[in-house]
Image (spheres, rainbow, N blue to C red):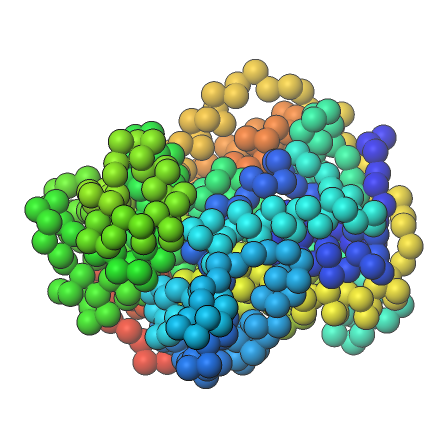
Length: 539
């Protein structure tokens, strides 16, 4: 019999969305947060740029909404964009109250205010930031607050395996939820003991982040393996817009750099993109030049690299003063210096890398999915905010806004959910320890390589068909492996990545146009009446 834990609220994921939700709920609920690795090893911690909100008297919510809609290339949900922009400032003020210290500056009159930077797609300076390590400031502050709270338990080094669902039993089950499944918890794998356990929860929230690890080159940490999307799909949730995977234009290109991202704030403060000969190329692609939305900049870099047959382009901020560069980008200065690059004198080699999953599990404004008592927030979710391309610094904002909205809904409904029950035991009586781990490694590398080659920045129908054929073969191999061997971290992540890859490919094949982050040579034009791409699991 596997060990069972009980709580009011299970939050799967420990980034900005999950931690924010936990802190909003902990006064009235017993909360467990599941963290796949060390609690800081997630995308939030590595976010450099900042968080968008209207703090400048010359800016407006209307402008923030307009910029987001333009970046989203006609596929944003306008109601959701308006809702997010309207709630942005209050959510940032809550974050400040938690202890996050955003950069400040003094004006000519000596008045102190927040320093606001500008990034691609924004028409005003509206990005609050903590130097060039905003995510680190947010993550460490929220983790500190969580660890101080007696009603929040943090389970580090635990993988969620699958959600546990049963017919709805909530006392307040509405006509909408009649006949729907209800989430009652999850099976989890304790990476410390290498044992499968379970958690019963009245409410379960997916806050697992994105799926960019499905690509060979990514700016994301290793934990970004699409776990939440895959688990929700297997449980019966719809997903939307998975074809829109954002490739960040400027990942540092160096054999020892790992996945180090060069924040868009560099271009917001005047950095220029150059060819190897030093000439600029963005003016030839877009009138907004370096501050064009990310999809345009990434395609421009990709085009120039292929046209010239070179490995990278260059990002140059050396025309700014040394003091300015060191003050605004201390972490980038330190990292590049460790690799022998002095960015006050020389440009930085850059390439695009998979960065953000704009689609995800479909939710409403309260964070609710298709399954009763199952919610999704943050990058794992499709809210309608990002459309066909996420605007810079709207990602952490989405985490904060929808964590708060979800908290309101849970606080008002949690008393209607049944008390702890005994969950079905995990059955591993017919599996053995694997002696063929090399199979997992081989499949892992094959998947990420063909996703990069066939489902990357520029696509064709033939490439997508090839990718789908390969992913279907891999699914059969991995499912057979999963049935016969005990789970491991690599097996669980690969199982989820292959499922997410299929969803990305299928969404891409359904879109017969080029829009935002989805660009195909076979359908280069825009459709007149675009709609979101929705996939529904077979029942």
